Length: 158
Image (cartoon, rainbow, N blue to C red; front, side, top):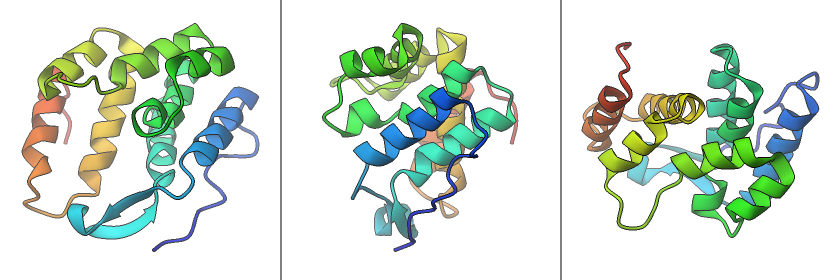
């Protein structure tokens, strides 16, 4: 398995973004991204939200969206609640994370539509899908699902 990349966030990033990075690292300790299921080398899970946040930064997304990029899987994959996200990062970030968090029984299309209803949530979900898709080997079963998500979000790129 790849080692944790300790340069996940720039030292000159705004404090709230560095705080979100530390929060994500702390709450994803031990979790793994990739592996046989995904057809890629396993790595610390936190590399995924780090890449999503990096994509958002390169897209000149607002800081609330970049923070949410770091945190977008925390509620879904850990014991952290939206109340904790709101306390630590504010209502705007908690709202973005809420709109991109999977709800039990919700269809994939409905989840994407819920994220698409608010611009910052749509940005986070877009870059989450693009990042996940970039890690798939050719012909992977998730490719069609991600293509559908991008279509719902109105993404016309490659």
